[in-house]
Length: 120
Image (cartoon, rainbow, N blue to C red; front, side, top):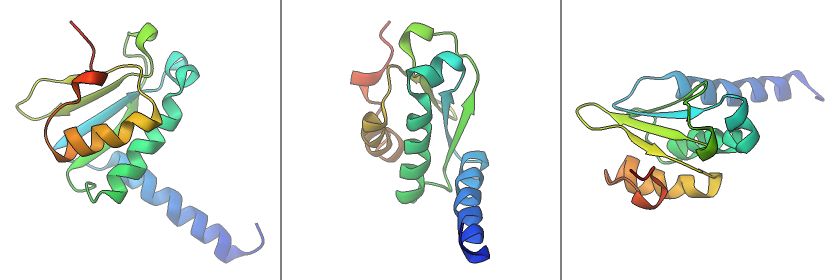
């Protein structure tokens, strides 16, 4: 840190991310962030959702948040997407690279990405 202005810029950047994750919306993305999820790569997945929801202009309708253990350790990182009046969708073995497709097809387009979903 070289100046107070630089520190202020970092603070504002991080507040935008926290506000987005804690906002309320019509759709909710929950990333499992227990120890097993973090070890499997959940942190980059969470960050990718936050960034892409923000960049895609979805902050008013999509909430991105985290939770502890979802109970599917062998399928981590696990992401659950819920919408009012619809069945919950569970995505497994997520990566930051897969997030763009979920945001585009599911959160924007309304069609869950079957390739990444938990199979019955």
